Image (tube, rainbow over all chains, first blue to last red; front, side, top):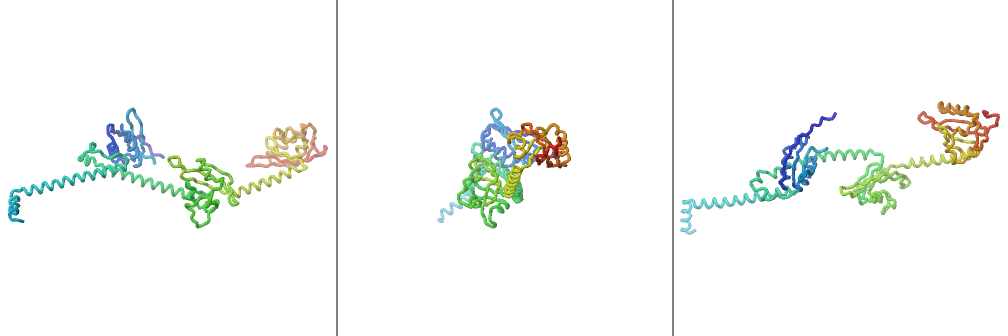
Length: 87
Length: 338
């Protein structure tokens, strides 16, 4: 029987106003800090950014680290949702 | 050293001025070393950031003290550790997938050939070697046309060329090579830009099947000729009463053309006085499979009665009646059921 899937806790970071590479470093720091919980599907990290470069650098880096990433456009900023990777 | 200079040195040491000078020089040296250390750290951080695909650090964004505080090298090193873990995990999965594919290729009872876009052989399974390739000769990197077709230039109907031109998979029936026949399925492999990088061709030998089909066709043709030229009336009737086959003697005796047979049923040619007897026999034949001799009276297209005598049997498939076969000849009136 499949394990019961819990809804992951969402942890949000507002990094609007920050530019690359600071945005990437902040995101990587959090991805390192929370890697166990991310891999276990316990949490989702959501980064709010208005830096267009970050919509490429953060998803690329996170996917290379094995996470699933979704980029959503919301009004005048972006939401980058990083979660457990799909095996 | 002159005496005057030596005396000045002794006086300076006594006053501490020499020690101050030495400390100032040492302090300058340490400052320079620290500056060079920050330059080195920044250059290495920028190198790592470039690897991560982002921009270098700007001095105004991160001064020297916050540079150490943030520890970007530590952050990126930890990120690289995760990247490496993920790559190792991916490699394990790829190895498993590769092993599975190799097992499938080895077990497959069809020949499988992988070509690159230049038509060069990249991989093949044991069955393909058994089908086409001489044992023990390495053909990886050789042109497919040389290896399979035995010619420098691909043939005009080359399956690989068709896949490259159409950019889609295709299937080909009964491709012939050196007296053998193959059903060929071919599919392109594309990169993320939609360009074909490889093509996979699957060969299923159908020589035996083709020969069997030809033999069956010949056999069927022979029996059809025999039946067509028979003086007896031959008919094949399905369980619903329609005609599957009637021979020339049957058509001539009852006056129907070939194109009219599809519209007829057994009821149309049996005389009303004989119908109960004949249809009873027909139903018993379908349910029990027990055939035998029968007398009947057929009615021709122009209404003429035709007493017949013959033999009827039934073929079954999976326990269900498939077709009844009847062979009749004209009978004397006294011999019919009228």
